[in-house]
Image (cartoon, rainbow, N blue to C red; front, side, top):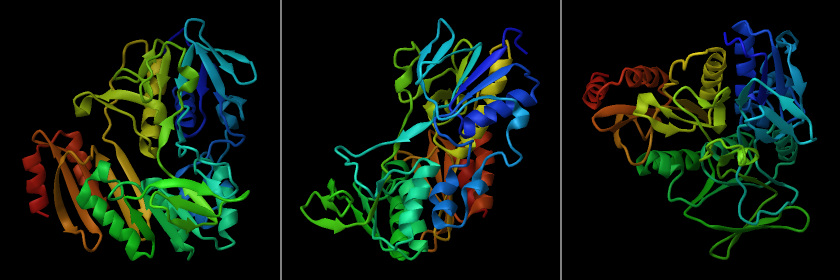
Length: 402
């Protein structure tokens, strides 16, 4: 353990921040840990926000991340607090209230924040979904059986749409692209996602432009680029997120779609990054710079960066096989590795028509990713093959053998 490490500051106390703190304590670090979180709540699980909590099947107490409490971690909490500046040379964070926090080691885990539409108005009934308070506010309005418009058909928008349809609500999804997630999945799998929504009664409109969200004090309609409008009582904007790095712009760290780190997730001596905000070269994918916005990566990367702070040598590279899942209607969608519209695609193990299949993704003669609809066993098998750097031919042979 690094002898000079006596105080660790963690900026961002969601999943990655909490897991980093837990790992430090588990590995014997008995110094001070300053836990800085920008919400008033103790850390909670975010995936249920768009599913079980929004559906009314879970309550806030059900989604706390540490059921037995956090007292045993002996953290110096700063809740409802934001880091606004970092002085790397002085080894200090500045908080929004002017407090300065000195540290020997720093974990940057400030996550990401939802994008807003250009000119998005602050009307009642218009939301993004990132926090527990967002989800509870939307859920309260859903009790009145509103007309719901979701802008954006990515994972978060699709999950919100599926949850609202499960509650029997009228749902319209607006997507600027020709298919849902077509940039990330390609047209074949994008069409499968579109059909999934439509078969569950969603009014899915593709290739449309949102010109404005209108109302007198509260939302009443969404105006489209062709001059038509859609009546709405609740509008949820789900058009992606951006990493929370504005507070680091003058820090001297490399900021480029996240905090850019080395292979071990080190951004500067004694400073590491984890979760949605971290961007690092993944050696398993030939050093491709990755920034992942999902639960599994936040957990795995947080454990890794805690060890990195405790080690005096450069440590091992962080080389995971990314794993993402999304529950929509009665379909569990899972992706592993690297997926993308530009990659070679082969459909295996089942049928697109029945929403039970695995799509394999290849690049330069190698299996690099897989996506499955209701095929968890096969997806996990391909995850292992990706970790082993399996060839594309071996993957196709595996698919042919069933």
